[in-house]
Length: 148
Image (cartoon, rainbow, N blue to C red; front, top):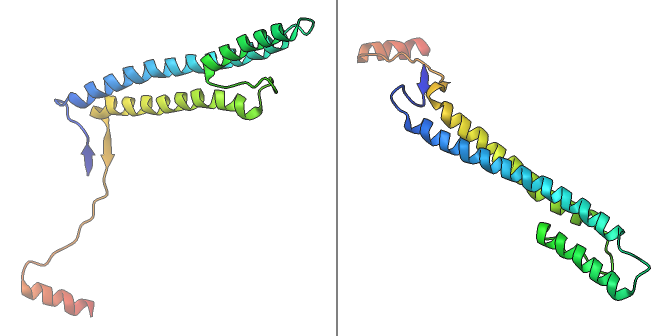
């Protein structure tokens, strides 16, 4: 026995699946771009902090650091402190794991949309059991005697 999720004339699940598939594909590409952008911003921050001129005055160094930290904050939301300009491992990974999780989420939605799109071809096998039922009282009594 098989259970078909949709029939040949039912196109609504396929249409919904196509919309989900298209939207998830766009969001997957956007999440991928966000992940690469976060990575590039983290690399830029490291090179920006290392390029601060130590020969200049304290005010110039703070202005250069503020420029670097503002760029990092606007791009990733990570706050870099003046006392410790180097990013900690927790700050680094918190800037990257959000976009990676977004990629995995949209990838799961992408597969769900594909499954819904292919729902016209989806056939699920269902286990079937048979049990013999007696038709009258004499047969029921005979079955009870045989069991005892």
